[in-house]
Length: 163
Image 1 (cartoon, rainbow, N blue to C red):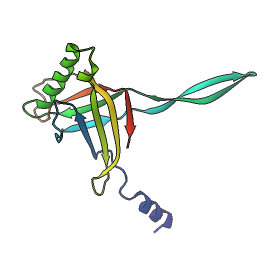
Image 2: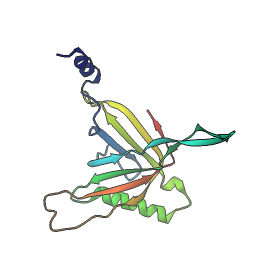
Image 3: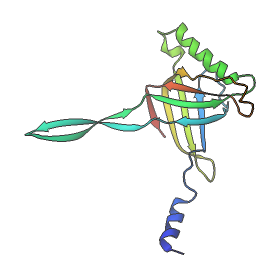
Image 4: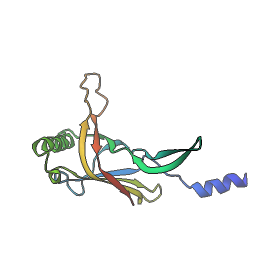
């Protein structure tokens, strides 16, 4: 067999998988070890602003500040009692009740990508000052008898760290 292919296969191993992840919400409504059925989580793009400088008729571009979208979207499945949906809805309602005291509604969210072979954390993103900004539509239909209810939540955050 091609030795370059063998070298590549040894280097990549099983490869990182985007379907091996855990989402944790650190908030008084959510138990520490609660697990949620998450269909998908979309981690925002991490880019960089450009600074354009014009000098003697030429344009020079310098690297600017880090540009991150300040929202993360997560699509959840829920159980028969709609426990998760009710918790997030209560959290959203708390924001209306106390818009001035952010300590009462801004919490933390963690997105952990797991190793393919041993399910240990490869990388963890911790989002700070998180709160639910938008809760998606839920379509009720008699045609959906072979699917679970799902809903997406767009969470606003102020900053994040990578571990």
